[in-house]
Image (cartoon, rainbow, N blue to C red; front, side, top):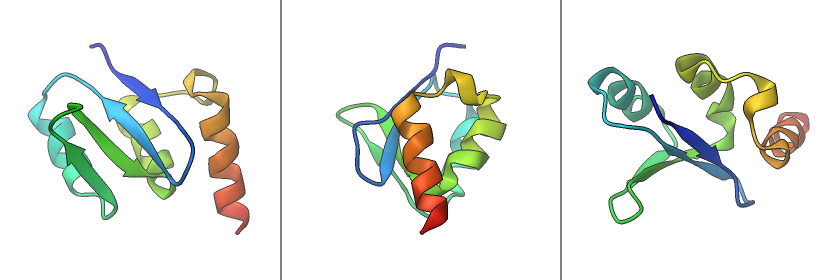
Length: 77
């Protein structure tokens, strides 16, 4: 399955993946997320990074380094 996670700064990251009912249901269950129909991606608050990593089986090494660093800073606050 082709999926991607991108971080452009701020407090959310972009998540793209082919439609799969289970994944969509799980992402919709998060409090701070929004669907962008034009971009065809989910924007998810950085606080949900651990849930997304578990759901899609991302390892820390597969994440954009700036996203991981931003998450660490978020946790400290």
